[in-house]
Amino acid sequence: TKFGSFGLTFDGSNDLVNVSNRTFLDITGPITIEAWIKPRTVDDDAIVVKGTSPGTNNDAYVLGITTTSRLILRFGNGVGNQDLQGNSTIQTDVWSHVAGTYDKNTMRVYVNGKEDNSTAYSANLRINNESVKIGAYTQGISHFRGEIDEVAIWNVSLSSDIIYEHYQKGWGYYNTSNFTSQVFDANRTVNWSYVSWQTANNYQQDLSSLVNASTVLYMKFDNSTGETERP
Image 1 (cartoon, rainbow, N blue to C red):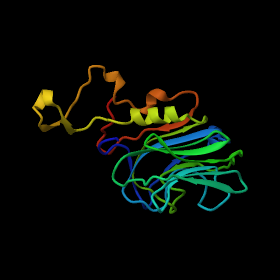
Image 2 (cartoon, rainbow, N blue to C red):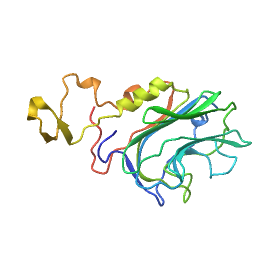
Image 3 (tube, rainbow, N blue to C red):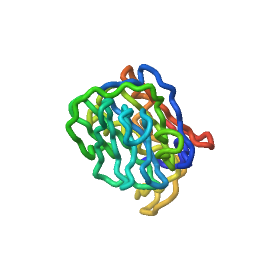
Image 4 (tube, helix red, strand yellow):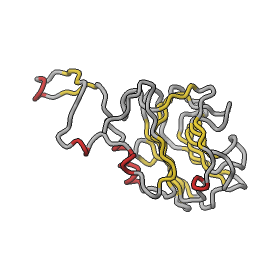
């Protein structure tokens, strides 16, 4: 799990990030949507949306949270929408890695690197003129309250192994935390404000090292103090 106040904070009222419509965001499938989220409250919250409003046939792809605190993945083909809800409860005030994939045969949702549900689906996703919104469907609808970071959209369906790898690479970002070691502190728990690894490149990585030709959008946010994740 990520530590601290990383990411971009959304107030749950009128905050959103708008990514202008581009042809590379018009993905008919396959597709993967990923993000790290830390919701403060849960109430029909949008994480990543290319659509207009819930219940319409203008949606292309949506990743969000339901009123029952489940991850939801929605795809639209211009005629109707297909929803897939996860089984796990999305926790408030903790970081969770969430993802949704579609390989043109199956929709899957993942929470913290593990597949949380799946369903059969086979259709071309709708191409619309909408921008991609982060943190809301549109102004005034389904606003997210909390932090969002490392939003990524891929024009491939990433495998479960790669989703888990992405989760692991986001796990263990630098911050002051409790560590226990009989070698260093004689079986006592102490605060260490800094930990350096002998092979640092194998730890505390973010997804920027994984961006490739299949990545159509990757957005990593810093917090208001200017502090960023340490590689």
